[in-house]
Image 1 (cartoon, rainbow, N blue to C red):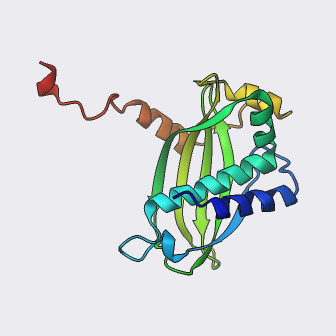
Image 2: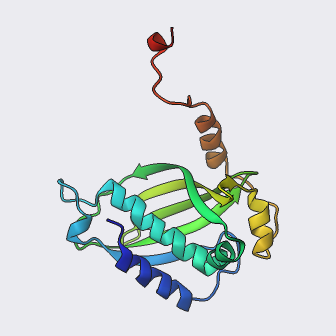
Length: 184
């Protein structure tokens, strides 16, 4: 189930924080791993990691002015891909922060990263997302979004590791898992 209480808490807290000044400023949110976040191995469920990152993304969008723009333009936000690197277990009642920021964009997608950190600075996981802003159910050029936010429509430079992920993902077959024997 979606954590609506956490969602509203994070959005309300984000509304009280100053707006983000730059496209790639980082939003930090604070969390605790609750019993309902756990899987059968007593660690935070991998799906919950993605959901809590969603909360960070919404708060980031709130502070960056994107939520207001989405409502004004009747646009929607959709996730179009992700890659996750898990490194440390998050267990019951552990405190952690989620750091969320937009990095760059191409002509179709905005690339965002999220990472969860323990109070000692150890990183538990890191996620790279590809998101699209939709108008009439079709992805629009993120430069339009940047302009709508009063920002430079030219993307910041692509880090090499994000470019490599985009290139590698373009090599994946679609539709996936096709059996060549069934095609004949």
